[in-house]
Image (cartoon, rainbow, N blue to C red):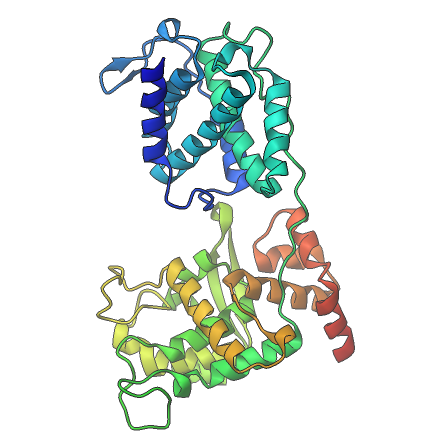
Length: 399
């Protein structure tokens, strides 16, 4: 028994990340997987690395069952990060059970034990979403055990009778009109504020930093504010989707559109560019993009020569995150009023801002919101038609 416990502990410790509480997968993702990714092949004969799974030969010992589950049902199927998180959650339940009973007989584990563990996690001040993640990992494990050894649990799968904790409604973060104005003002000055080689600020005779692209970053912010696009949708944009796509026509156009935006579920939609976004995009195409890409391909590209640059030069989602975080910090460095600070600035903040403004302009027309945001869920549309009080107050004040 001691040997088996030591073996499982070694496996669990090797799988646990340096930051055990770091989020690897969202609650919805883990819970969904626990419900839908059940171990469907209940027959013996599963083979991993030459070892055959024989449930009848597995003793009634939690550590051994967890070790088999991680080896036969998780490792190689889920990512290493998710496998580590599942291993951590299971090790925590095993310790809870061992402290309560002094042994690890899995067959006597009942629903009230799982419910008690859930309460203990809450008492340790874990967030409800984190508690649900733990429960989802345990539920997936007990479901697998029940499928490969139907007689092990005398009553039923012990995790089935425990409901997930209710989560507070998601609170969209939208920028106020004052925040949008100061953010745009900063972006208009980015080319002058951008760090130079050997010099800190603009106005000095020095070459721009080789990998800084202030015109692109300005265009990115204005594009997000004007369209409400998701990060992934921005990354997939090609120059050919912009109409008109010639510099002069784009500058003079009273209306410009990006067509064929690839949304979720293979859906497509068109989005319109505001006058600010049209000018910012034209400036970027004229002053920077030609240095980094040809006349075709991705709309927003990384600086040529960057080690992490993709084969087609396309910006990555992570790069977009970093750009906005950097701009948010620059913005807040100039703002003395804490209520007007925007950091950490995230792409979805600008999407929410666009959505609230669109809801106000359309009278919260659900159909129009669905079309422009690429959403098909009434739950999400409802979030955009009920802005936070501070944002709503700012809109009313400006009317």
